[in-house]
Amino acid sequence: MGLKDYIFKGKLFDEWVIGEEIITGARTITEDDNIRFAGLSGDWSATHVNDIYGKHTVYGQRISYGNVTFIVSTGLMNQTTMFDGTFLGMVDMQITYQEPVLFGDTIYCRFQAVEKADSTIPGAGNIVFKVLVFNQKDEQVAEERLVYTFAKERPAYK
Image (cartoon, rainbow, N blue to C red; front, side, top):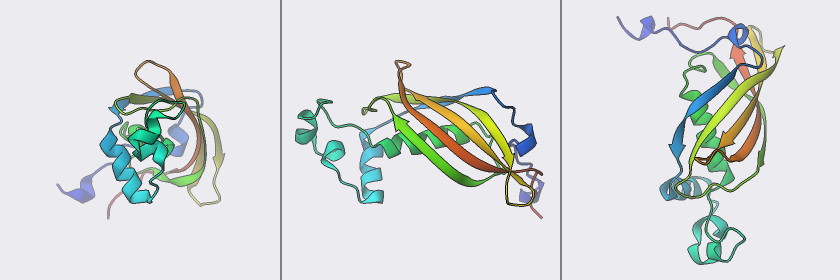
């Protein structure tokens, strides 16, 4: 047995059911997540990294980057293994934020496929996902519309 024997667990394009809702696991957003994102992106906005400034905003404290919420939400979706080896790429994304995510908030997602169509890529199809992101109080903090491309046949190592 070896790597070539691995069977990818992800859903193929045809296996996704329109309207089926999936709930992810959860993850706590930390100050360290925020600082790592600032370093990676080069975005050192005071709203996110300056404690004194943050105390004088409408939030009364620093808040996490919206993009941290987004990347953690896609990671939570990926941890379901439904994308393992069948996800080919992201075609489009739209995100709106309803509430700030604070350090120490724990977020999770509810997502569902809402549209399917053939892709211009042979052997692939596009799926539109509606993703709702919630905090530990079950308050919606973000809504995402993600368009992903999926394989129509299960890949294998050769």
